[in-house]
Structure formats: C-alpha cells, structure tokens
Length: 625
Image (cartoon, helix red, strand yellow):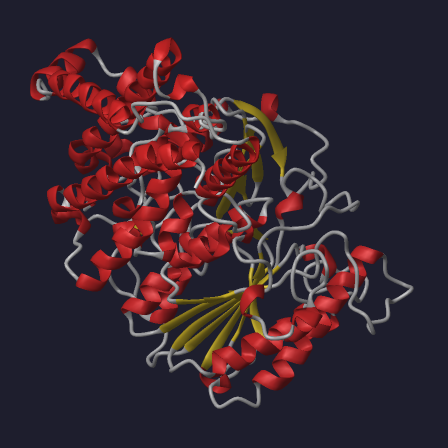
C-alpha cells in the first residue's frame, strides 16, 4: 500500500470511530424522542450511519486529502506539517463540537442542525446567548480538549522518519486517494450524491436524525437556501385564519383497496371532459371520467415532479425555491398517506419506472410511509427502457399490476408514470397520430397504457373492492391562452373511480394536490387527528387553492385570483370568471377590506409553512389541540 494512502486512512479511521460512538451517545441521550428500542432498528441505524459518517468525515478532511496525494517530507515534519496539523485539528474540533451540540440541541428542533440552525442561532437575542453560555459553560473547555486531542492524534500517526517511494507508487497512491474521496463523499456510486433522503433507506422517519451525521447535514445545507421566520400574527390568530389540525370520519363501511395513478405532466387541456375544445387525445380517460367523481377546478401545487408528488403524498406544498425532497428540510417528519393507510392495516406500495434515486422518489415514498417501493432497477426487462427516463408506461403498468396483485388486501398501491415527458417520443411499434403534435401523441400513448392497464385490472379479484384515484404531478407547457396563464398552467385532472358506483359526479369547488391527504384519511378510515396544509376536497364550503413560483404566491378563489410577492404584498388581482386569460389587473378597483381578508389568509399560509418547516412541525402533535 502506498505510504500516503496508509497515512491518510490512519488519520481517517479514528474520526469514523468517534462519529460511531457519538451516534450511540446521541441515541441514548435522546431516546425519549427517537424511540429506538428494537435491536433491528439499532443495527440498521448504526450501519446506515457509517455511510453518512464516511461522507461527513471526508468532507472535513478535503484539504488533507489534497495534501496526501503525494508522499513528501512535509507530511511528517517541518512548517508544512504544522499547517496541516492545525487544519486537521481545527476542522475536526469545529465539526465534532457541532455534533456535541446536537446531543443537547436535538430536543428543541427534532432534527440534525443544518445551516438554518446556525443562522437562527446567530439571530437570537444577546440575553439568550448569555443564557446559553451559562447553561453550556463546559463547551469552551471541551473545545480546548478536542483541539488538543486531534493535534495529538495527527502527530500519533506520522512516521518518525521519511523514506522515499517510487514515482509509480506515488501515482497509484494519488489515484487511490482520489477514488476513495470521490466515492466516499458521494456516499457511493448511486445516481445522486448522498443527502438526508438516503437515511430513509435505513430507518423510519422518526429515526432518521439518528442515522444522519451533523457535519454532513451542515455542509450540504450551506448550498441550499432556507426559509426565514415569519411572524405576521400570533400563533393563535394564525391557526384561526388557517387551521391545520383536522379530523375525519370514514367514508366507507368496509376497507377498500386504493390505487393511485399519478400521471407525468398531464394537464386538463388534453381531456375533453375538462376542456371541450380539446382534440380527442385521451379518449379512454375521458370515458372513465363519465363513470367517476371528477374535480373540474383541480390545481397542482407545483410545477416540478418532486414537488407535486410531495404535495400528493404528504400534503406539503411547494412554497420555497428548492423542492422539499432536495431542501434542507427533507428529513423533517411529515404526515403521509402511506402512514395513515399502514396504521389502518393496509399494505403500502409505491412504484415508478425511472432510475433509482431519480427525484428522491424512493426516499420520499418511505418518508410518506410506503413499505414497499419499486423502480426501473427492479424491472425485469431492461429492453423496455426508453433510453432517457426509464421504462415505457404500458409495460411498466403491467409490471405494477402484477406486483399489486401480490399484495395482501386491503392495500394502497401507487404508480408514477413517465413517458409523457420531454423529449416526447413514442416506443418502437407505436405509431403517432398525424392529427396530434408530439406532445399530444405522448399523452395519447399514456391513455393507451391506461386502457391496457384497466382491461387487465378488471380481471383481478381485488378490482371490485378498489378505488382508483387518477391525477397528475403537474401540467405540461402549452400554447393555449387559458391553460398557459400563471393560474391556468396549474390546472390538472382529478378522477376518483369506484367500480361499485360507476356514476358521474362533478365537483366544481376548488381543490389541489395537498387536499389528497385529507381525502385519503376518509378513504382508509383514519379517524385520528392529522395535520395538513390542505383541506377536504369534498367539502363544498371550502373552495380555494394556492401555489408558489419564482417568488410569486398565487391564492386562487372561485371569484378572484390573488398574486403577491414573496414578502406577501399584493401585486395583482384578476377576475376568475370574466378574465380567465389574466389580461387585466383589477387590484385598484377592489375594496381594500376584501383584499385584506384574502391577504391575511395568504400571510397565515406563509407563516404556517415557513415556521413549521423550520421547527420540524409538519405532522400532528397532540399538544396542538
């Protein structure tokens, strides 16, 4: 083994051992919140934690990794040795200090500290800082001891004599260190670099903080924007304006299977049911709509798949620039349709045909409570790969059907399609319709795939006991002036098909993706309180929706559409019925009292969102009642 590699590993291994011990101490000190009591849970948490520790330790040793690429005297003695020793001792003292703080700070925010936590710490009052120094008076002493310890550790592994080595060993050593560093920092050779989402592979959401490594969370969060605290109202007034704790009665006497079909990019524009002027792009889905409950005023809460699926599965809207699964809050505990279903005895399954790690979907599904997940990597015939995104919809639907049929009843099974996505191409053997453009042809193929799926699904023993919910993650770009506006571009279909009751039912009240979680609480018979940003979409008295993009907050009502900036100052108001193309801003003509009422609700939404995200309070806590 090249000498510089041996030296680098000797200086890395003690850090990993210390992080491992810190994790055990972290769990023991906070187990009243983490609830890690099962031996199996302990094993998986500690194994998963090693992966995060390697990445975190290598991040802190990045300068050392560069300095160890070649073997030279400066690694062992002299002024350069002293500089490297200082970097090693200082950086590890800093990050172990942060890990030590998390041993005690976790009980306040219920997550590992990221950049937002340090920013918050910097913004506290001088009095609070003094109080914290009094309470944690021992920390300066610990800092001194840690610095001394890491300095001694650095010297401990430096050979006493310098023995030169050949150039080819130098080269081999450099390549080994580069390889170890790149793979270790990424946490493996998977599609996406290691982040908090991966922790859901090893633990339930309540155990995720135990898997994570504070230095890694901090360093990765520094490149992702956080949310500012918002205090427009008192907490009591905020909850009055925008209540989030909800409770529902079961909709069905007997437990029904639930099948979710989330379509990639399907706008209302492509269905004649929702858009009478549309071409016949999706005739099967239009025919199914005639046997279903449909929401003609359904909106997505996002324009990106990761955000839309988050809204559907967890009722978390997209009110920040970073998608929730990729944000610094991605490890927050949330409500989830899988959790509710599992609580009621359902088997839960989420499947998508894309590469593993794509959009963080597997981790998001686990976070939402789905026990079983599948992706392209689990699909048996890679010949059905579309060459870009994943498996073509039609064959993947049949794979999903086979796997669904293996589940015990009742079950909650979810599929996310992908073929109706740029570059908008069709599988070999599927002819395009010359009357449709390339985008429309891909939705025609999606419709064909749905028809093929349902023709086989209705032969299954579980079909008659199932409810099928069909909607999309977001809409597609369009040239239609109605469906291309800032509001219209969020219009998506929502169908609920019950084979036992194949009658049309048109719901005209406004609904949105975050309303799915309350609907699911009713469908699976979950009667405990939940915390949701949405509301019951079947409640005729509650008709509103909202979304956010590029700093603009849009609040949608039956009569008016309100748009504010990110500081919650109203900028535009449009008449929803008279001006669907949004051509005339009527803010100056509206009564200030009416504007103020809508703006208060918008501010309450923003306050609930920002503060709950920052404080990790996005799931129900009995203390909120």
